[in-house]
Image (cartoon, rainbow, N blue to C red; front, side):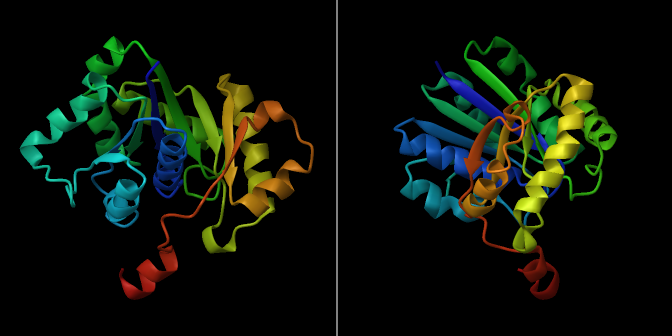
Length: 234
């Protein structure tokens, strides 16, 4: 059965990193994999900067930046439509963290409604990002995104980290906040992510697996840092 994973969430929550990891893991299992980059705003952590990596892993990419893909703006809609019409095993949508990004997903509402495979809509949460520090803020932002995207979130992903200052304590803090959001909303925690060493340390605590889901150890493919961006502009 074809599986579609739609990643939504706040700016800086780590959607693109997770999208690349899911795609690489899927392709590594022999799945015919397509990534749809609907982040039309954030030119910093953008999927198109990893075209060579995705091609090396035999992953197809549709991106609004069109870098290296031979896609023109006029054919973008047709390229996205291929996610529903072509014979993919796994399709990962990386959706921008604002209303424009969510609206770009909403335009395919009828295609999603007609889709008869497995559809997962994951809210990627980093509790260290603005508007995500509390369960109430997480749920408000989620409902706003759902309205624009015309999709209902089916699971939370705890991706709490402080980038180059990350530690297992970041994941622990995210666990507590997202646990409350899950209890308040009834939405399950489907994944907890992090660098391998931090994730293993966190898992050794023996916390309730209901609020951890399936752990995913992330490889760092998006190597740029906010510090480099703010100081050096690249």
